[in-house]
Length: 310
Image (cartoon, rainbow, N blue to C red):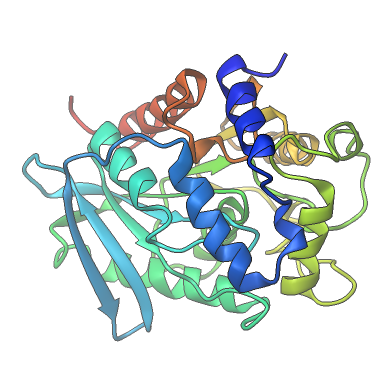
C-alpha cells in the first residue's frame, strides 16, 4: 500500500495539474524538478556550507561540514535526475541533512548534464571529483581513509561506477557505497516486472525513464558500457560494502534488487532495504515520516561504516 502521506502529496500535485517530466523540454523540466525536490522537504540542517570550483578537475563542488571538530569522514554524493536534471542547489537540503545526520563531511558533485553533455560526461566528472576529493582530503580537514560514495537514481549509478573504477585504477580508496534506487540495467533488456507494474508511476514513469535514456545515451536509449549499466559488468568482485535502498512503488525496483543480488554473488557485503510504501524520489521527501526514516537509516549506515562517533 502506498504511504498515506505520499498519496496525499501526489493527489495535491495531480490537482495542481503537474505534468509528467517527459512532457517538457530539458530546461523547463529542470525548473520543475527543483520545485519537486523542495516540495516535500524539511528545513535546511545547520551545517557549514562552501562552494568550490576545483580547478584541477573543473567540477563545481559544494562541501557540507558538520559542526563537530574534524578531521571528518567523507561522503562524495552524486545527485539523481536521470543525468538530465538536478544540481547541487536542488540537492542542497538532501546533502545538508545527510551531513547533519551522519556526522560526515558531504561533498556534492555538480556533474555535467545531458543532452548538452551526453554519456560519459557525467561519469568523467564523477570520477574527476572523487579523485580530487581523495587527494585534497587534508585541505578539506577530512580523512581520506574514511571515504564513501553515495547517490540516488542516476547518481547511484555514478557512485557505484566510480567505486569500480577506483578498485581497478587506484587513487581514491572507497570504503563504502550507498546506493538509493539505482537504474542498474541502463535501459537494457531484462526480466524486471516492476517496470510494467509501476510504468505509470506514481512518481517516476516508464516514459520519463525512456526520455532520460534517449537524452543521455542517444536515440536507442541503451547504455553503451557497463559503467552506465552495472548489471552488464563481468567483474563485480572486490567492491566495498554496500547499502542498497529501494522503493516498493518504483519501476526501477527490480533491476536495483538484481544489482544487489549480483554484488552479493560476487562476494561483496550487501545490505538491502526496501521501503514498501515509498516511491522513486523519496530521498528529497523528508517531510514524509517514512522517507525521513529512510534518510536516517542511510545516514546511520554511513556513520557505522565510516566509524563516526556519536
